[in-house]
Length: 66
Image (cartoon, rainbow, N blue to C red; front, side):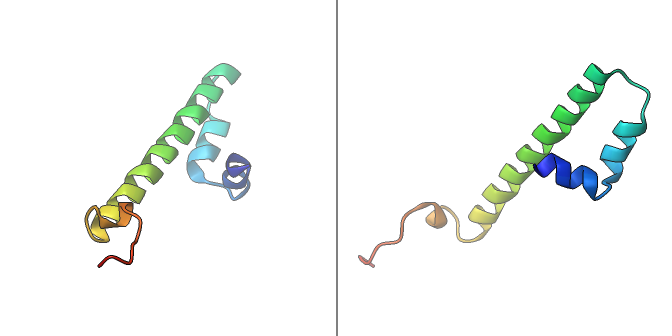
């Protein structure tokens, strides 16, 4: 579903892959690589946000001890 939204909105990278001369299997490999890269960047950004938000503390459950 996420892929359909990106293609629908006309992402330039997806448009370039769609218009490029390649076989369907090559196109599928390129799209899968883009999806994996997108997931990796999302994970790195999430980790960076959590670390920047106060070190390791956001990874712990809040408690009433302190």
